[in-house]
Image 1 (cartoon, rainbow, N blue to C red):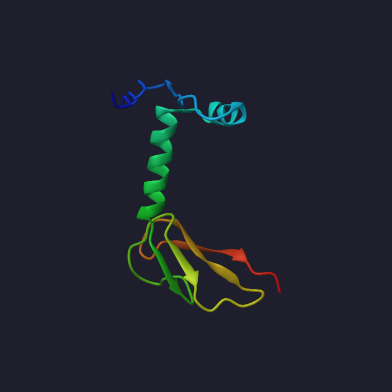
Image 2: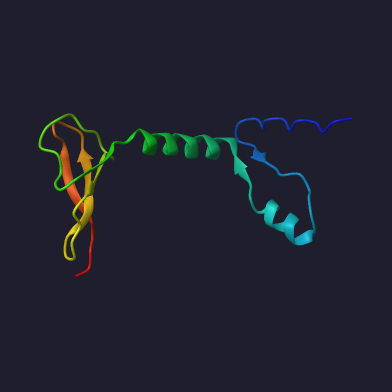
Length: 104
């Protein structure tokens, strides 16, 4: 007889891992408990990050519609400069702030 597929926990309940391995493995697995809500929030945050624009350039955009979280990676970083720019207010072109100071 094959293994049974685990059932999805109802909302607000923890997802419990089956018992496997030795005691230390089981203790590690027992400490990893996520509720369905926590998993949904994590998935939503991941999708938001994936939806953000990630491009390279030597300056933040001066035109085009951008949303919060869009990132321009600095294609010519130098000591004392920044890793890139992030959009902190949606708009055309949005409000951009430098981030990731590069120590000289």
